[in-house]
Image (cartoon, rainbow, N blue to C red):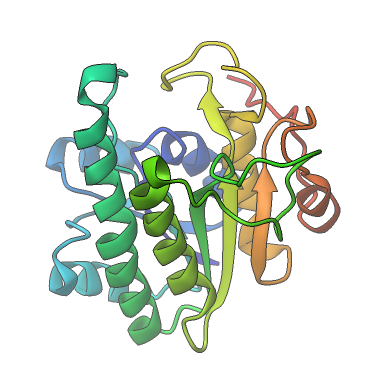
Length: 239
């Protein structure tokens, strides 16, 4: 299967690339950096240099890969967490979720991709009793308004683009190699290896829709992902 991976050099993308390759998929990964493109090539991935905000360049790169499935693992966050810079960090990531996703979905429609698997988050649910499920409402508090609006825009594009089966993975807060945290930061987190494995599973499994992907610790329910995708919260790469 031909996979177009946006965010191939990101924290999840780096773990996902070998999983896709070892599963026998033909992978094209995009990056804005020629140096990172060269690194992808050494992993057996066809690399393309393109900026998701450049709709024409993105379409050209995607069309050359003849994608069956597009995987959206793009984020715009710093390598290290700086609390003083968080408003600016969140603004950049929100823009990517809105504008970048719109460009990806437009390109997917034109190039004939049948399925899109996209990264979202599971930590914006409105407070409530018990584990949050995929049908529970999102947080409408003023302090989270912009971030939640960006998540809603991303999910709406992925789930409601005609002709495409959209799968949204609502990830918990990442921990593990390459992330901000070496250990889980509270409940509702997810190891980056398990997050990558969930994306691999969603390429070929599960009905279109939303899936929580996190630790099975009672913060959010992952029963749907376990049942329909075969998600295993304890999955780890052997490297």
